[in-house]
Length: 237
Image (cartoon, rainbow, N blue to C red; front, side, top):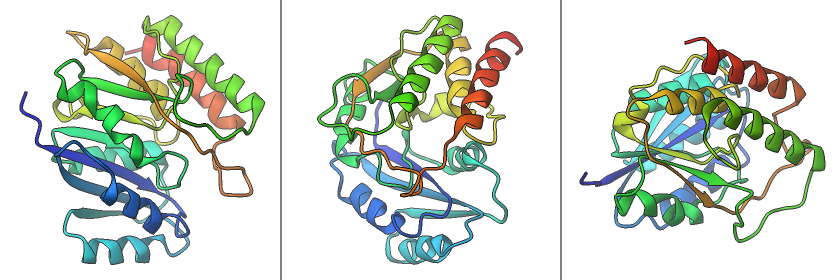
């Protein structure tokens, strides 16, 4: 498959402080000679994120700006972004600064070598650096990944990672139902059920997590929903 364009889909909710910096890093990131498309989906932000997004789109023709009038959740924003993406590879990038676009070459290499259809960026596979934060969050992530793997028969180390990249023809075949953070186990379950099963790779990435004071949004209720989503999308089709 001749790969020419990378679409970076950025769901955004109340990220006026980081969105412009993040987009600058995406624009500057090495991307292995692929043309770049950035699809930003503002999910009903209550701060100045929409103003920032529209200003960026006015200055950079590679940016596509999408708007949800009301907050619907990360899964809903990604559903919109995937539908608008036109690149051969579609990569999820959060609007905060936890994940570094400097890792794009690692994520893209298995595609460009013709080995992968889907690539997950793992925070637990020895990236360059990881910020030390919440112990129980890391335990929760590993437990959710373990339970997900038991259902999908994949041997992922980080199912909950933001960095997921897909061949566009694959991701646009999948209907996303979950509105919020249940997207992660849902998409993993649906990937595992595709026939023929896609070639899935994992690569180690760096990670600079945020504290709740710095704007982290995921909480224990999202973990409960993730468990529900693992069972629902693996057992009930």
